[in-house]
Figure: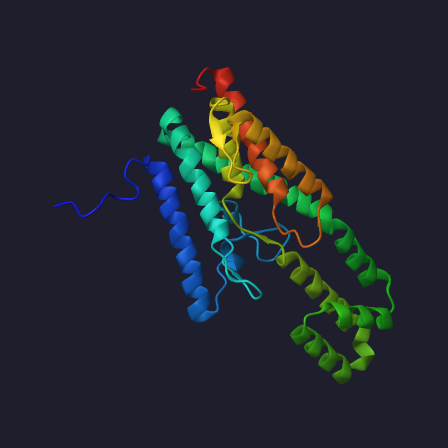
Amino acid sequence: MSIGASPFRGLPPVVKNLIIINALFYVASLVLFGTFGLRIEQYLGLHLPTAESFNPFQLITYMFLHAYFSPSEGIIFFHLFFNMFALFMFGRMLETVWGPKRFLLYYFVTGIGAALVHILTQYIEVTPVLEAITQDINNASPEALKSFLNQALPAGVNNEFSRMVNDNPENLHAIAREFMVRYRNLYLDSFVTVGASGSVFGILLAFGMLFPNTQLMLLFPPIPIKAKYFVIIYGVIELFMGVRNFAMDNVAHWAHLGGMLFGFILIKYWKNKGFYY
């Protein structure tokens, strides 16, 4: 006797398994943080290559993690939901057209491409800060280093710094330089990226290219729009937001654009090779 239809019935295998894997990682993130205080993104989220916490496998694993906690907001579900909803809505049609292997390849190429573009833009952002830190290490007086560290270091590290200086004041400069290096490492480690958005934006781009005249119904405002115009408008918005870099905006807009860029290149390559569809 059939009790009810599976929510995954009719879904192609890659889309189905990607949704399941992302959901499992999300639950694991909640359980590990709630039980052990362990933030899994510190190990599997994408770090800058020069950060101490970076590992090459993060170019893959970051795609399966999503924001799940903020001290001011509590548990966050929308990051995962909207990415998986877009994967469900648009990815299944692409997998049906391309087949599982090509769709999975596209998913990972756009996700990794998004990571590379995001890392590049992050380096542009952090370079002035890193140069200032290096300048302070090489040229600042001991008093200036101490003043900077008192403002920059986290409380626990700052307390350790103050204790070491009080115990060994004649070596202030050497101690301050050591802690400046530690601060640099902490600063680099603070940049962590998670989410499947790069691949999802690649999927949106592909849907707009393969089904340009398909009518989509927007939620806000509730009006119909052709897929090609939807993709163009979304891309322009992401470009504007990435260039403007508004304060308190922690969305990886350049990663979204990177996913679209690498998706466009791969689709054009396939088309030139004669297996676009």
